[in-house]
Image (cartoon, rainbow, N blue to C red; front, side):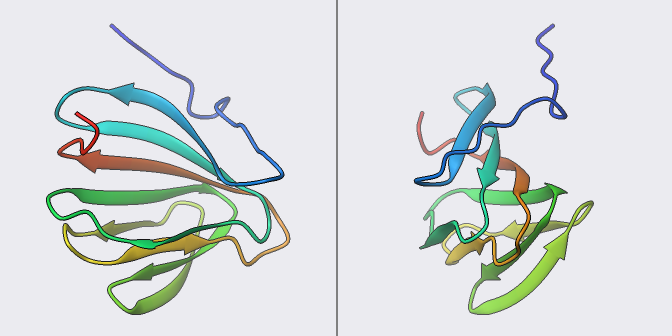
Length: 107
């Protein structure tokens, strides 16, 4: 059985958002995204894959399909396949997200 500590998974980089993989199969992946204040994942879309963002800590400004909303710890949002999505850390604190995507576009 594979296990990982989400609580202990963190890797912040001053130059850009960090992605730390927890699990990956041909069908899905699960990463922790770490964003310093001011960092972002620019809006983009995945034609055949859904993405879920779950806020572990901090607050992010999420853009999904032309709508923008701030979400804090304990909140999740779905980015359906084919819909533009992205996140920005507009706060003064660090932001950590648990991100699931299926099917895995990297497989």
